[in-house]
Image 1 (cartoon, rainbow, N blue to C red):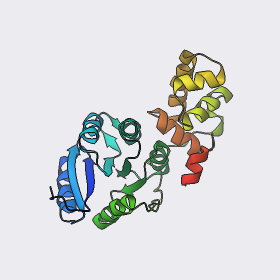
Image 2: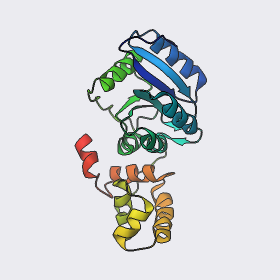
Image 3: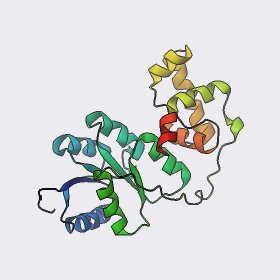
Length: 221
């Protein structure tokens, strides 16, 4: 890892592909203004590293052994609300990009981009410059978008509240139903949309036009 300079941008790398991580460390260590302050291979390790080292920017792989980038971002925001997160992904489809944006990441770089694009992305985030959104790739083979009629009106209400970042308890209060009922609705929503997580359900719902993006998401887009 590189030695710290007076204006070094502190970077934490979170990715479970060891060879890819080694390549990133070599790449960033060659940059005089970037300092790799830690490595993490799981969400749990990422949270510990952020607490211990307080990085400026986290380079976060979308898929990790114990969850995905949206789940990791949610935990990191509790530890460091102002942390800058740059998501790296080999999946450039719209659902993946939308899930990352909805989770609150500050930029997405697809892994087919040149290494210099990643370096410049880190510098841009650290200086407060918004990153250009990558163009979505074609949907993954066999992955069909749900139709507008896939959910009941109540399920659409629940999904809309999820998109706004509300907790199960918040949704229960807003809709005047129990938390157990909210969880039951979510349990039915996921398979209907072909989603594996709440955030993926939100992303698919937005992409399919079942629900509208929340106001803060539209502002970021």
